[in-house]
Length: 316
Length: 287
Image 1 (spheres, each protein chain N blue to C red):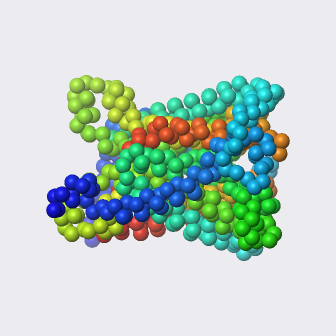
Image 2 (spheres, rainbow over the protein chains, first blue to last red; image 1 turned 180 degrees about the vertical axis):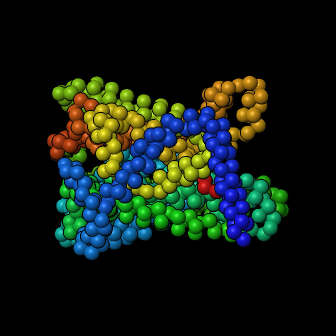
Image 3 (spheres, each protein chain N blue to C red; image 1 turned 135 degrees about the vertical axis):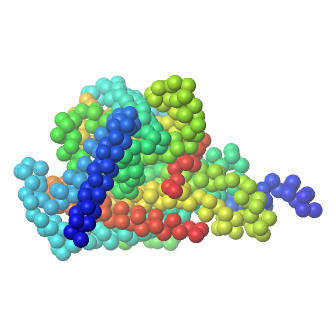
């Protein structure tokens, strides 16, 4: 028995040694490939991978950027979940925000891409431009601020006063009741972005023969066509579009801060990202901010993986 | 009968009623999408009294170029010459975008066409990096920049743009559709690896690098450099324009002119490359 076991160990070590040496050979053989990848990999690792790791390590420290970080264990996380009410509110807001803007913008991207694609190339191009433009319009979204201005000079207040629906102007962006819905509206306005283009492209790539075959097999109208042929054929694009939509719906702080103010009234528009910005750039509690960043990172990746798993079942 | 129908209607399974229905929805949505943009455009040409008109109007009555003239005067009076902001912006956009296209293409080429240990891991990491908000890395990025000594240096905007992972991802997906036989035959003809990359791969993926150009430009154009650049003489043009526009009520007209400039540049760039971008997106799926 013992000798046999020893033999087995020996063969296992030998096999491992073989594998390592063949890996070495492979690495040496592909040195050209590494050379080509090196510039991108170096920059990507320096500015994306390492910062994520640093954030994870810093999240276990107290760090104010002046003194060296002090190791505090799980304290930041405990504080976040047990005593930081504003954080819990921000988690709630983020979810309300993401649950509305994520799926709605995703479906809107898909629906409008499909509708646009039903028409001739010139009409298609015109609508694509109009729909996509808000997402790259810089800070043109601030126009919405004028629409929702708090006094009677705001367009919406002016309109409602004129019709007689209200007697006093509503302080839209100063009223916790309205802040989040308005920000959601504005973010949706800007949300026909990359996913929208991805879906248009996905739709154009579908082999027209599939539709002819479908018509022969008894598909009667465009709605059936969409469900039975179009969606299953563009699953890869649906997966990629989901990633873009989810990331966008979690990262919308860029619009929230100028619209709702920072901090917003009663923290009504406080999201995880704005909470992070608060601790990172105003209070300089870097360890605490890093803990928020780590939770945001893990939460987003978990959500993405879940959605990918769900989408991989489309048409199966 | 049936044949007749299929000639009249070019596509199968399409009713005119459905077309009209979809068109109506599209036009209504397009109005919703376009009104803020039209307002931005027309306001840039409004004289002061029209900007504060009550009840407000979307369209301009007496168009004027005064807002742009005021902007030109304000720019010529700024203590850092406007040409300095402009040259900063040009440096950032040209070096950032150009470097991104070359470096991302080189890397994407080997990831999509070569086999080597670690390739799968690297592709996974790039995909993962698309899945979280960039704010996650904001604080550590500051630490990295200060370690590199790039605070108050244009490097802090240019070099990270080279490693923009969405561009890398789109490029490597697009390159996957290059037929392997094309590359192999070039190799048999004795072309070096770099020659294959430069003379065969790069021309083939032109739609993809135009896409990378537009996206990288959009990214850099929006960035006012606030995170790593504090010296006035190193700030980019969009920052200077925003500063001029942020002058309260008296600058409202100028602010509208600035908003128009900020809006039009990326939109026009997108407009001219739209078909190429859509073509690139076609290969972007995850299998």
